[in-house]
Image (cartoon, rainbow, N blue to C red; front, side, top):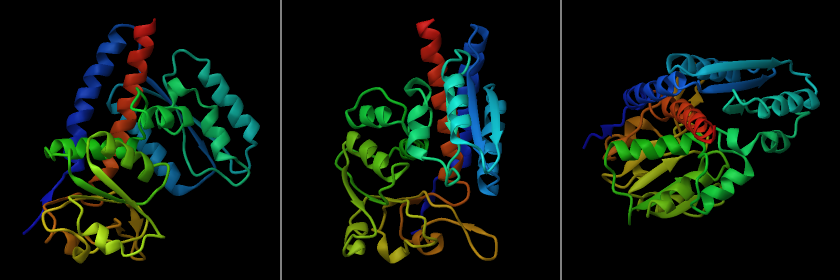
Length: 285
């Protein structure tokens, strides 16, 4: 068996085309979707992520604003900018690129963003709404995973789903989304005993632990859908996921590659949340 490859680049391109059409329609009606991005410090990976997000905005007809601060920036300055952006009706989404320098309280920064403009879906109120099945901005990576499962017509109701990782950014919201879709969900982590027992019974296996090639083919149920959220850089400079792609692809029924899998979908769902925020603002206006 050779797994079907779930092409994140192709799906992302399709969805971004649809988002560009929506953004153009909103702009014609007087509301151009706008995303403000705040970058603190000189972390190279963060700079690349921000550059990709800004480029994605431009291609989709979404206005982007970028605010950069030095590594030693005062948290009060960043909080002041967030307050200013919260009050600006022309800004529909605010994103603070993580991680932040050590002098920052990340929770306080994220909670300062208006719930209506929290297009990353990290604000506690959006997390609470998501857990209760209410309208909420969903964190972009798990939202992108759900779109990928939808694209292959994966039946979720009654499916056994295993999520490896319990982060607030991916693991926890991923479990909530799969549960809401009717799957039976197990969340595994560093303290899980007999991890292989859990992964081998999963119809859907989501790996989000940040350990290169951690999930091997012998941990996968034959025919399972394997979603690799991880992105790790090896000593030779090459990128790989949390799944050992070569061994897993011979067992799985479908699998996401790294790169070109979940990564492009994360930015796409950020754009989708921004367009949705602009749509809500236009509706209120």
